[in-house]
Image (cartoon, rainbow, N blue to C red; front, side, top):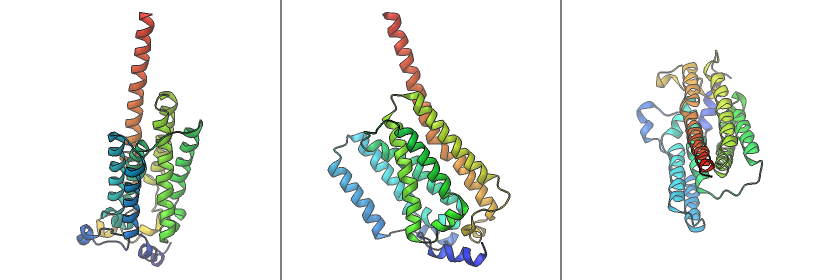
Length: 255
């Protein structure tokens, strides 16, 4: 992609043109459609869900993370830096999605865990393919298709995780496989020998990074912080599983 095309893409991105470092903290996104949609979701959840306090806390925690991702200056920064875009995506799929899934009803059919895990993987890889990513930043509709499909597939996967938490082995395997494929994608991004993402070829220098350095930082963010919630869920489920085994063993001895 040439420089003119890169500049044109960043001019039409939903989050706006690349911000200057000095003015970043004034670049909040107060899109009334976005704020209205999030507000309606909050009202509908409180009105219809009848959820317990912990579920409500999870819902509003997830909603708060979405506000950080889409309303705070992180949205504008993600126009300049691919690393900020990856941080934005990891907030959605690894922080907001598990909280929102925890807050919603989870009556899911058998086999949902496998299907949701595969969908989560495919969506993640497709949108981080350089040409597809470039297309997504070319307009508001394509941008929201990327964002909503990432969030939706992640929520479907985490819903399956929480729904089947009583079956730790299967869920642990699914989480480990998800971390593995995310780690592979992160490695490909981190160790690429040249910048892959055209929309950021002209936008990183103001932040003291070359496009390749920005891309390497993005891969590291996906590799480590992005995987932490999945790893934490594995540890929690493994601990529950071991406690269950110990309890069963104790009951067997008593019997």
